[in-house]
Amino acid sequence: LNIASQKCSSGIPLVGNLRTRLLALHVLEAVLPACESGVEDDQMAQVVERLFSLLSDCMWETPIAQAKHAIQIKEKEQEIKLQKQGELEEEDENLPIQEVSFDPEKAQCCLVENGQILTHGSGGKGYGLASTGVTSGCYQWKFYIVKENRGNEGTCVGVSRWPVHDFNHRTTSDMWLYRAYSGNLYHNGEQTLTLSSFTQGDFITCVLDMEARTISFGKNGEEPKLAFEDVDAAELYPCVMFYSSNPGEKVKICDMQMRGTPRDLLPGDPICSPVAAVLAEATIQLIRILHRTDRWTYCINKKMMERLHKIKICIKESGQKLKKSRSVQSREENEMREEKESKEEEKGKHNRHGLADLSEPQLRTLCIEVWPVLAVIGGVDAGLRVGGRCVHKQTGRHATLLGVVKEGSTSAKVQWDEAEITISDTPLYNLEPCEPLPFDVARFRGLTASVLLDLTYLTGIHEDMGKQSTKRHEKKHRHESEEKGDVEQKTESESALDMRTGLTSDDVKSQGTTSSKSENEIASFSVDPTLPGVESLHQIT
Image (cartoon, rainbow, N blue to C red):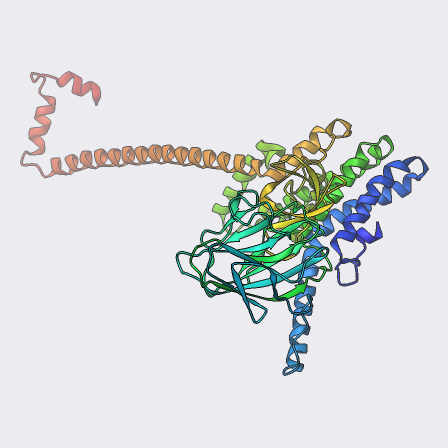
C-alpha cells in the first residue's frame, strides 16, 4: 500500500514507476480479500481510508505536484546543457554493432557496391539479403533509396528468410515487404494495412523485434509504425527486392543497431488513459473487489456514507455565507430583498445554494472527500489503459495492455493470455477495452433520501429550476406592477377630470357675476312662478 500511495514532501509519488505501482495494487487485489478474517476493524478502516485518499491524490494533487517537478527538472537540464556546451552529445540509448552489408551470395540479379549498396542489375526481378541475420533481440537499421524511378518505383524493403523460395512480392511467404510505389505491405499476399509511399531521397527505418515477433517501418525519421505481427521465423535477414524489369535502382543499408530496452512503458495518452486515470481506475477496481467481500463491505459502505454526508455541510455553509453577504443599500433594495427572501422561504430546501458560489475550501472538500465515492460508483475512464484488460478485435484474443514505448506511438505492447505468445506490439486501433468490474449497488447500504437529494444538488438541476422559477416570479411581478401602474394612472386621470369639472363650475359662477344681465333680472327670473321649473329650483335651493 505504501508503494502504491506514499508521497514525498514535494507531493510526487515516492515510487515513480507506473508499472510498479500498478503491480502493488494488483497484489493487494489478491491479498486483501483473502486475509479479511485476520484483519482488525481499525486496520480495515485505515486501509479503506488510504485507498480513498489515493484515489483523490492521483486525480487532483499528484498531477499538479508532478507538473511542478517536471518544470524544475527541465530547468536543471537546461542549466546543465548551458554548462556543457561544446561537449559531446549524449550517447544514444541504442547500442551500435558492426557495420551491416549486403551478402553477394544471397543476391539475385543484383550487384553489391562497397558492401552497403545494392544495385538492380539486368535480367528481370531481383533481390538481395544482408550478411547479418537476426535470431533474437530487437534491431533496427535504415534503407536509403539512392536511385529510383520517381512515380514508377519498383522497390520493396523489409526482411526475409533464407533460403528464398519465392520472391514475387504478391505471393511470397518468405519475405515481409514494404512497397515504395503504393505503401502496401506484403506477406502471403497483400495486407489490409497501408503505410506512406516512398521514393528516391527517402530513407526507411526498419525495426525487427524477434521477442515480440513484430516488424515496424518509419519514413524519414518518423516513429516506426507496426506493420506485421506474429512473425513466425527463427532467423530473418534485412532485404531489398526489385520487382520492375528496369535495372539501375539503388538502395543503401546502414546504421544497424540493437534497440535499448525502455526503462518504463508510457501510458499512451491521448489514445489511452493518462496516468491519473490509470491509477484511479486501478484503485477503483481494488475497492470494488473488496466491496464484494462480506467483511469489507460494511467498512467501505461506512466510509462512503461518511464522505457523502459532507455534501450537506458544504451546501449549508455556502447558503449561510450567501445570506450574510447580502447588503441593503436603499429602501427599494430592502423591499426587493424581503421579497426574494419570502420567495426562498416558500421554496424551502429546494434551492439553498449555487455551485458557482462555493468557496475554495468547499470545492476542495467536494473534490477530495466526495468525488472518490462517486468515482467508485460510476468509474473514471472505461477506455484502454495500462494494466487494463483488452480484446483484439479481429481474433477475439484477450490480453493485458502494458503500455507504449514512445510518446505519440499508435501501437502498444500487450501481454496475451495464451502461453505461446507472451508479449507483442499491436496497433491500438485493433484493441478495445473489456468491460470493467461494476460497482455492486445491491451491497451498498445506508443510502437515504436526504443523501440522494444532496447528490442532486451537485448536478445543478436545482439551480436551473431556481432560474426558471425566478424568471416566472419576475414576469409575474412585472405584470402585477404594470396592472398597479394602470390602476394608479386611471385614478390620477379621474382626479384630474374631477378637478377640471370643479374648475368649470367656478368659472361659470365667476362668469355669472359679470354677466350682462342684472341681479334684478336674475332675481325676477328665479321668483317668477310662471316660468317652468321654478318649483324644482326652489326645492333645490
